[in-house]
Image (cartoon, rainbow, N blue to C red; front, side, top):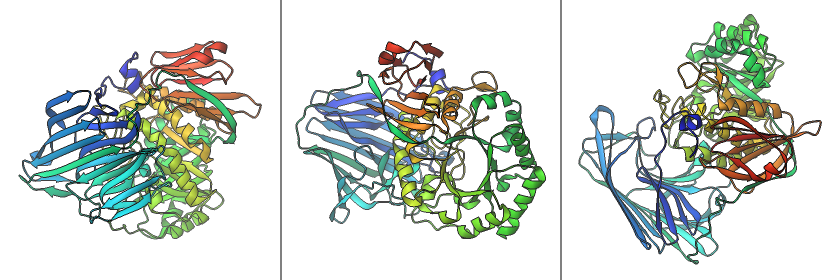
Amino acid sequence: MTSDALLLYGTRAVEAEPIRLSAGPLSADFVNGNLRGIRHGGIEVLRAIAYIVRDRDWGTYELALSDLLIEQSDESFSVRYAASCEGPGGSKLGFRATIEGKADGRLTFDVSALPESDFETNRCGFCILHPIAGLAGSPVKIEHTDGNVADTNLPLLIDPWQPFKDMRAITHQVRPGVSAECRMEGDIFEMEDQRNWSDASYKTYVRPLALPWPYVLPAGQINRQTITLRVTGGSEVTVAATGAEPVRIENGEAGTKLPDVGVVIYPEDVEAALGNLALLTKLGPQQLLLHYDPTRGHGLDALQAHAELAAAFPAKTTLECVAACAGDLDAELSDVAKMVRRAGLRLDAIAVSPSVDRQSTPPGSVWPACPPLEDVYAAARRAFPGIRLGGGMFSYFTELNRKHVPAGTLDFVTHCTCPIVHAADDLSVMQSLEALPFITQSVRAIYGTKPYRIGPSTIAMRQNPYGGATKDNFDGKRIAMANRDPRHAGLFAAAWTIGYAARVAPAELEMLTLSSFTGPFGVLAAAGEPGEAETPRPIFHAVQGLAALAGHTQVVARASDDRVAALTGRSPTGAVTAWLANLTPDDVPVDASAFAGSVTIWDGAGVRRVDPGEALARLTMPPYAIARIG
């Protein structure tokens, strides 16, 4: 890595380098006690085998490793270590782990956990991740705990619940003639479709969700679990790596119209937005998504602040209105409408969602009391006649997938995503982009051609549907479910943003929101963060570029591999503009000779321009760089 980590990630802290384990055609990366990228013959078999300990809010404990011993030969590898974590009240859980891999395709991961005192957890045990690329919808064989075996398929569209329960083993095809069996012992396992949360995996995990949680691991009682992977059949020829080959970007056929770009505005951020109207104008969003939540104290003053901004900035406006639904719906929503009129707030649309629907209802849980959504939307329609009405979830696609809204009563549907629900390492966050086409395809399968909006979707989590609160992260770490993430201030977020827009472009969205204007989710650096206050972050340029493409016709751009994302639009005058993003921490050679025009690159060294012409055939994109061509 040639660039400063602070510029790339918003923090000087870097992730631990993985240790490559190899035995013949079998390989895996050892990272912080777990395995990533398990491959056979160069093909990914499993995305991860990880031993995970969750707290009562589904946060993940950081494990402290000790006594690490790694041994490797041409035909085998082995890893042994001890680890521990501490819970509330000084409770402590220790365990010992052994990993063994063989050239014949066998891999074993064994863990024995021993609580020193009663230890509370929502989950303690293995999670196995199957990749989605090339596997979604494919045949698998499921062996259940009672010995029955079923031939079935992994879900193609995203399953809102667990596709498989009471699992002992799952077998899938790696490539023609080669199969992989993953066997799980020591507890009862089941699978969930992690694409619900924009994870790029199917997750098989320990302890059914129908059982109570949190639960207690009794002091002094050993809990042992073992995962065994067996890859059989085929030759042992390893596929050659292609990382040195340039990523070729080619233009295809004309696609759909690219969506409006919005920025979310919270009442507490209006003052800063008004003080930076020139930068807001330069950013150029078509929509302001004005957040309003009476359950968190928002009232007339919040609407007046939004009205002042809407009057100063000529964009379309949508009120993101949380409904308390605590009494008479007509009275509640008409009161909001009266305050909107009193504040002088001009609105083009309103999106309404019950406050209770921001909390997830996991499998086996009791659904909370909530008025029928038909009644909520009918009351909103009566209170706000003459403007467009949207509904859906202000949380994530998971909740929309599990609780369908009556789309016939709405003018558009909406939801958000967040890539750090389950994991917050750099690779997992970037891999989450792979799940986005499955999310949009699933929404279209449910709601057809109904106008569709996504956002605000950011790396950091603005609310936690799965626990009591988001995690504070003032130290700027990479942690799941955090309400701020250091990478949002770095080039990493700019690349993720371009990659996000590229992945959802075929869905024919009418609006995409991937940031706020100021604050922890904003395109401007806030006081106390790296850089001067009210200075554009790298993500500013990405959102500005997407806003400039709004209304253009997408020209489907194809990349020869997924190291680089590409989004191309043709203006009404025929001018073509392409945005590229390097989604990796490495320099990536790019062949963009299918395009013409000047090239501007934003990378860890700043912004620079590249002469067009022959340079497009040998363009080098530094880590997480974004580039505009045309």
